Length: 287
Image 1 (cartoon, rainbow, N blue to C red):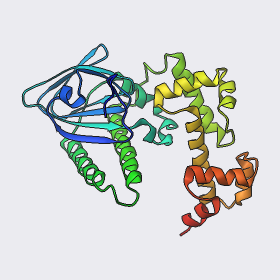
Image 2 (image 1 turned 30 degrees about the horizontal axis):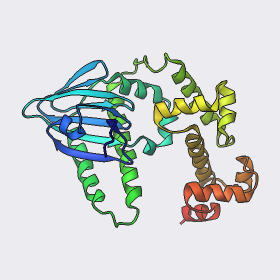
Image 3 (image 1 turned 60 degrees about the vertical axis):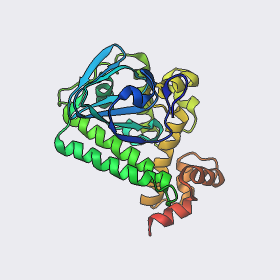
């Protein structure tokens, strides 16, 4: 779970309750997070430093520690009780990055402002913890990995809903829109939405943004821990599913519209990213 360089690198969602000592839980007095770490204070008080910012959580306070955060100086009261969730960034749905309020959410997460939950919110987290505990123990069940992946995404969206309640209509992002990499990332997301699955190469997007593919890759990995190619393929996959399931176009027409060189390449893509041939996807969606 932990590496010598005190960097957290989970492969999937992790969910732990009844944590009394963050330092002991993390196995270190400091770490760099390579996941989205969620800390919910259920009882008592917890002090934590994120970078140069000192934060104290009280009962029912929730804190989101974004990718790349430097966490240190963990000090809890004698009666502190915490719940900790680690969400793997590569399991966050592509649709989040193309949401109209994406920048507001990102800015709020990076502002490191605790959110005070209602008792019903806390109970919701306990339900997720119970569901995760059950399925994490059912390693032989069908779709075990898929269930945990969907739990990861579902809980992430629950967190975004909590953030949305904390953001006023007048809220304007401050931190994330001021840096050149974030501007490039935002423009890349805009191009992805306009692309509609027709461009497949990272170089095409990099050229449109007047940056190198390597620099674009460094930006997307810093912001969302995904390569540009992953994000492009996710967009193409989303369009393919929509076209196969909800349009009257033939498979050949869809392949042509999305600029696949031939049906063979199109079939290989769907099998790699969707696990089935175009025909099977279409027939499966109609059952």
